[in-house]
Image 1: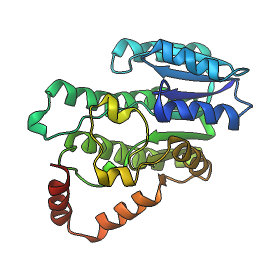
Image 2: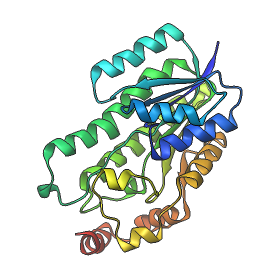
Image 3: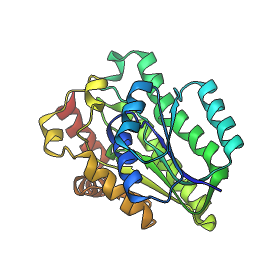
Image 4: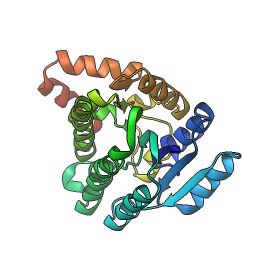
Amino acid sequence: MKCIAVITGASSGIGREFARQIAAAYPSLSEIWVLARRLTALRELEAELPGKKVRILPLDLTEDTALETLEALLKKERPCIRILVNSAGCGKSGPVESQDWKDASRMLDVNCRALTAVTMLCLPYLKKGSRIIQIDSGSAFLPQPGFAVYAASKAYVLSFDQALGAELKDRGITVTSVCPGPVDTEFFQTGGIALSPLKKIFLAKPQKVVKKALFDAEEGKDLSLGRSMKLLRLLGSVLPQKLILEVMRKLFL
């Protein structure tokens, strides 16, 4: 039985960096399956990983047909999934009333629905010692005025991960939620999101976020947090939520 890694959102940013680091850190893997909408970007990624067997899957995971394609491929190949990384995600900022409902719906489709579906499709192929790594966000810890739908979608991911991790404990499979602050990728440009001066201070490099996430996953941790997000989580647990929301409203609206 061949062992593989499955990485969604692999065409750019954190997902692309996971492909690079997993290829280097897990030489015994038979294949790395990389999923994203952009075929050209996936081919460029494949060229970055000479000597590695990369399976390119140009799929839009918000479409049922794409999920059915993945399901059929898994049933045919029946691999052991050593590592599943759900990195596909999107975001839009601004007050809810200023946003297009289609953009908001797509955020939920990508961040919640696709992540859940891919995880469920992969579960039968995970074995003892397999790792699930879900790219979440520090936004999961608190509601965010000006980023309401995105933060709510990430709160869903965190809740889902924690419950799933408890369900899989007896199988020896861990679920790690990666909750960084802002990361220096094209995420902000793609979503038309302006970085505030405060967020620029905490901007992290994707290489560092991914390295820590892989380490924390192998350690069996349920959360992978940078120092700034540890502080945010602590503040969220001790300060009144109304106070935090008012401060954020003044900062980001």
